[in-house]
Length: 207
Image (cartoon, rainbow, N blue to C red; front, side, top):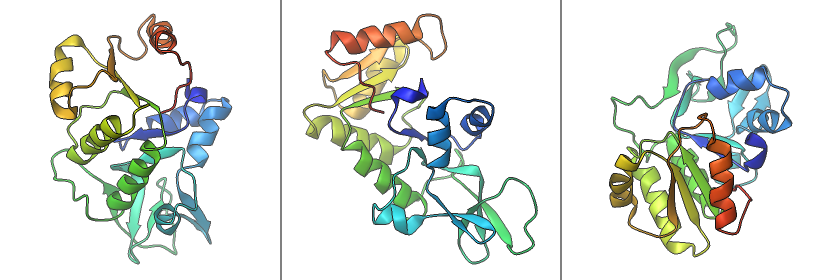
């Protein structure tokens, strides 16, 4: 499934995809996990904020709310830390946005991640949303602006019928917002998704 996607963006800070990637031989998964925006420095992998700001790097995996394995150092860098001690780095806090706290979109790294996501979004034609609750106003605004300003855009949302009206009320009503009423992983999910794309003249999954 991941082979069909250009970019995976998530608000989850867990390591489900990372763990799956370490146990999978699919090249698409490997690409996602190696293009996360980190730059190798002596002894550490540091989040390449400059590369994201200047658009000199391409990300395949965007974690908009941070990650459980991202840590601030005493110098203000954001590094990957998988639990092993690094005698050359003093870690101060995890880099995550918890559901109980208000997200400060104007603060980095979340501002840079969001701006990168928004820029990439406006270069896509098809976006598939799976498991997102539409509770982040900044991400909702990005989707709404994209769907109403890019004539070729199509947003396919995996959700139950009882959620459709609430989602449309958030994003604005458009015929280019479509729903797939299967949960990811249910029997027939892939077939129904393919049929939805073919009925609309495309089988290219953009996001």
